[in-house]
Image (cartoon, rainbow, N blue to C red):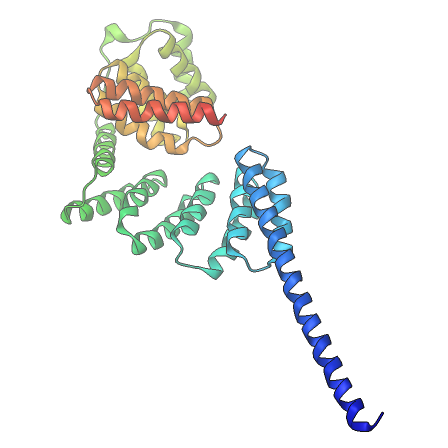
Length: 319
């Protein structure tokens, strides 16, 4: 066999090997893509059945196949948040945002992570980015200012919204809430006939005046609730919100008292803000919805009544 023939056979051999290698690479990529899809959809399935740890296991397998996939980072962050593993949730949402910094869904999720940690200050900064992208998110920024006790900033922002004729029902309720809050500066008194005569409750009230302990406050409010002292319950729970603004039970009790006093609009204002403080407490969330139903029934808002009844049904179904 001469040199020319040997050279041709060698070239053919190289070509065949290259084709085989190329085909093998295509096959491997297809296999990896199929595995990725299998793991990803299994993760979604596990997450919907509240098996968040299993979902994370499958998402980690996805990440091993595709290290830069934004959807995997997002889903990992969501599942870690549901497990209350806030550090991990932040790590993965930050990774996702590094790839797509103006993604509204990612930014909203980061706000949720920060709110779950009561980190309203940082949540406000992220919410500002959302407002720049879409002004419709201004309502949530107002709420965050209220939750962070930056009432002047909340009022200024509401004024700007009103000046642009962009007021929503939520904004009107926030305005009402802030207006009612200012009334606390005026001394509100309860008629003597409605004051409790029980010496033990008076002792609790004196103790609370000195120490401002939350446990003592709850005993006072429980007494007023059990004895149908709704005017007192309204006043004391409203005052307590100045000291304990992140306690959802106070909003719930204040809303309950306002409903009993047939001050339905005021009740809706308080309950709408308070429900946002409820985290991982299904029973309390249901109580808020039930009170909102009572408020809207009192105002004959049948559409809103139906909306909150549907929320209750979905919440019960999911749990």
